[in-house]
Length: 275
Image (tube, rainbow, N blue to C red; front, side, top):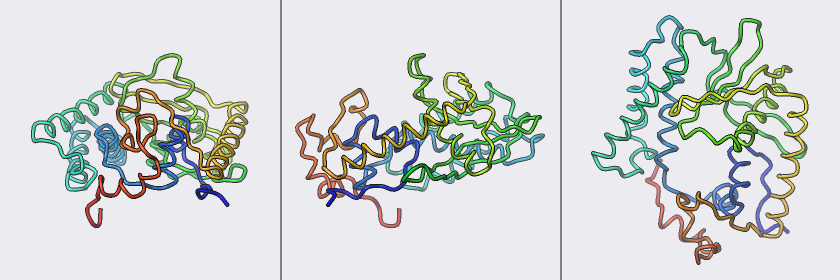
């Protein structure tokens, strides 16, 4: 009998989570333990929502004024929710938060003219079988080029990666390309990451070799997750990310006891009723 239930679905973010730290994956994805919202993640979600709203309008109306009106709407949607209130920002910190969001919107507008974007789908849910599991997730933007071919676009609000890390960042989009082809019968012609903070655009063309590698990689990774669930062994993997991990109090690398997390995390990170 397995120590933990083996997941039958994986998303690109969950894949990254397991690769970054198996123990953090256990806490968040397997046990579903609560954790407070993170300021960088919430900021990214606000900007993603603003861009979704902007590109949902007819192209001729997509100017800077509409972009910032869309950000205002996104702000009004997020401000009353636990995602934002759970950050517990001071008034000054909240002003900085929204100012940063505005700067990120301007960063996007410097990268491309939204009036030229032919968005076929926004925040598209994608899902497909892959061996013994299903892979799934949301694509920020799927657009159509003049020749009818598809382009996957993913917005990033953090720092652009170093040259040595680009391949790893592109693997998420390769998973999306795999799912889109499974759903639509067409491999996208291009996939791109837009780092709106730094103004960096990373572009790749998905290949048949890359699609085969998606299958090989995710099948092997799911087998590793299955072994971990069976044995109960989710070793921590220390890195700079530990400084931002909400589960650090229960990590043995820092003197914590993982078996206490299920009881203590809900007490440390209580969520308001209905959130």
